[in-house]
Image (cartoon, rainbow, N blue to C red; front, side, top):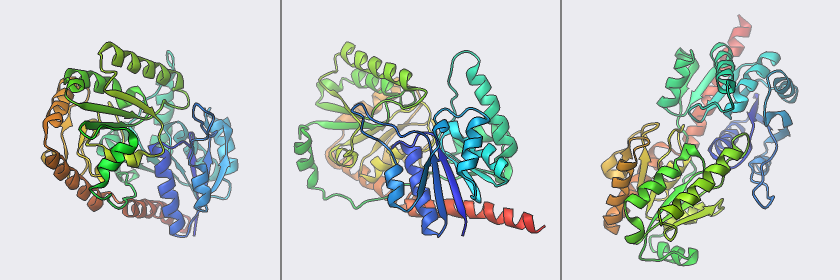
Length: 396
């Protein structure tokens, strides 16, 4: 069996970090040793850790803090990662900011590198910094990454544009752990326990408060649909971004609050912040809305579908394989407030039994195609393929 090192700059509780946990567990299930190299643990506004680290330890995964992964500068960060990953047979990078570092560390150690590319790429910073970051990332990935595992065809297209082609680039969508469905009669009780009016039409958006997730467009569409006067309630579940974009994310949140007040929808829009009971909120809701400007393969959409909710989503990465808008919910053009407004307007008027039928179809789709055990096994197959190719090359 092999030792697999994984890097993640921000070991929080967002999608990329949770997929790392899923893949680490799948590797351990197959008998491989796993060591996760991570940046500093993020905390919430009250100073409480919000991290995957404890969960990894509970699954017999070794974790090692590499402080420079928070803002990995070329040279220093890759040296530290190489030291922490010494003895590994391959290295896997998860966050955009640490993937090039993982590749360079793999070169230092003489081992192959695998990139789990969870999102479409955006490079941030003042002046020429984004262009410099993109150039360095592109050169490193195109020349030296052994395999790039992309969560959607949209992400794959970006990698192809960067020069990664052929067998070095594959598509593997994210998956989720699918829990048992809640009893149908439980929704009313959940609404009472959460303080939600049983007669309201509850829409929910789950995701960090960030320009990527486009809650600003959602609020604009919510107001345009007149949802506040039609017994609609919108729950925004998530907090601001950790790391280099923290200040911009905080400013975005302040702008969202201002919009809600200016559009006079403050009585129907709630900012719930980070929640540990997202499953209960989804079970109590009627519709999920995910209007993101860009994505990889959003776990929030899969989790809402698994909870039995129809989903209004943008087409930034396409739709889940097998998705039918008539059965599962509309896919609206990215950034199109008018189309988003029309979709919200439609769901405000739909009958409860029609929403339940659509939600049941969504759950069936996730059960059939996005169960994490199957997705995790496919990821392990890819990693083992890289290791087998390396072993064969050594024999030659």
